[in-house]
Length: 589
Image (cartoon, rainbow, N blue to C red):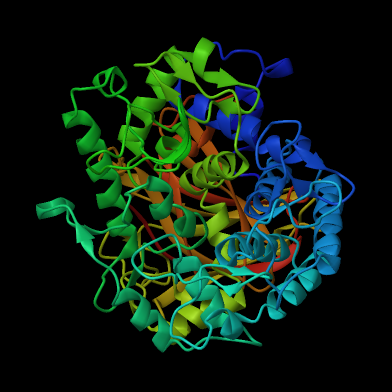
């Protein structure tokens, strides 16, 4: 998946020098890249264990290992690290975990970085095991069909979720060899959604789907009016982010509790309002927010938007981890932090925490916090983590068993999904055999005319779709199809200036397909974007206009005067060089 490769190549200067301009997207991408390298450097390469934090004597956190497995895949995908080296590092990690001491498949929260043994009496932790196994399953899906996927599945399948309930309807919070289960259970709203989902989806030791109902029945709310939300007791923002770094809840409406995406958005906005209204701290007066568990001037604390829950310390990872939910407010705060970069930016990106009132900043980076930044930035710009994780069969199974209502989900999430297009303007639904204004094919290089053909066919989901057959097996071959967005013969253009994204649905006849899409306008404007990882299931593709890249020999596209959209297949780029893709409901939102 190389959606932002050209952009990333432009952003980073040799040696990671300071950006020449303060473009917030460039800053966020640089931060993501620098943060991802934490999981390459702060590790024992012999076993893959990742440091909990950047101190010489730090143990490994198994949750940090999980975030690291995902972050390394992201780094490999963007070319920041060699893909083969990343694969071997992940394989080493999973092989090591297969031999590690565990209790019914669950691991100790902290491990000695060098020996893998339990560190300092730490607990067997179901939530930290969950965050580890989520990273393993993601890596397995990313490296599908490899030993990495086999090992990830094996590690997941040996987790006895039933045992961890201790014969109750809830998952216990910890187990100790000295005294057994803790007296506390995972009740109340928290970051545990991903844990309950993986426990329900287990192919070997699943808990009952009804346990999800018992869990949500224990939730309580905070806030009022439009900001009323299901809340954690401390309102630390990480609790609204961890599960959603992996699971795309945007399209799922759960009985009794509603949409968890909206719930996180409200909780973050509640945090922003809380900080804006607190005039006691310079940190807040200067426009910063982001109360979450992190280091503070007086030690580690679970900061949150509650009375007495802050001393003016904020966590950059909580701000960046909120990008998908509150992008504008997050970007505003990121720009403010960048203005203070001499104090707030270091080897692995923005510092873990800072407090302007006490002139303090954290000199340690913490793995789980750095990982949150990497995953959420990637989710915001490409949706990569959601895309792969939502394809994990166990996740699909669990969501199906829980049975949330689909809001406007891609059909790939459920075999009976009805795709809704009410949230965007469809400009081509292929109901006409020639398209509304015109459809056609073209070929170039060594590709003969017979190497490409397209036609409109009936489809049970969309009514009609565009079937495109292409072949670029010969070196130097390229071909494609075109779609008119307006009637050029009449001098017409399509005004997309009021929209932000190009949207369509796509599937292929094999896995891991890709193609290039171009937009054109009459001013000789032409820009492109690579769509990668197309699968055999219908998937909604949303491409922000800002992510299109201008060709060096053309003008920028005038989005107020679009004329044509082109699908391009190329021998030197495409992973599948002879195949078929299907396209449905092209539009803008």
